[in-house]
Image 1: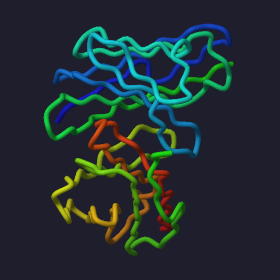
Image 2: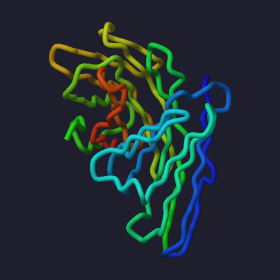
Image 3: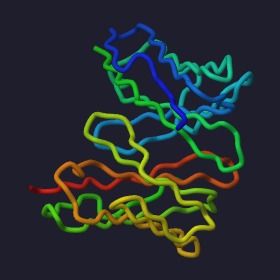
Length: 116
Length: 111
């Protein structure tokens, strides 16, 4: 089956620094990738949709200047949390679709970010 | 909010019993997927059911879909302690192709 990886799996950073999270599709070309955020004991909330070679589309309430998304190739999308604050501590999960008509999505294992 | 809702929010059962979780959504969909998530871990894909399907089975899992009511159910038969986890449904909006997750059901299976 299709595999999506994320790196790192967990990261701790200090307030004010930036953190980059990578999402890779390992065995298929991902025309579209999605980024989700999950706070403890809550569901996943879609943050943004990124298409290869174009600007990401952000969901309402998500700051595009704080969460920079780059989908530079068909196998890689990155999420950079800029000037991180403790309230950005969360579980970040990406998913990818290969653009076929059935719209199946494949999820990465997630990255746990802790901002101290 | 377009987020779907699941009920119950929490469910506690004895090992060997069946567990049923329900999911309601708001838009027209292509697919509905069910996922499991153990505490602090990533998502595990359980089953995908397409909008033209009404029922699907996978091992001890049975999923139904009623597009007229915009609802789905996940049945886990003969539950095991290892089934303890949170379960989420996710639907893709037919217009935007974005997947929206339900609020989740926390299942606890007691040994």
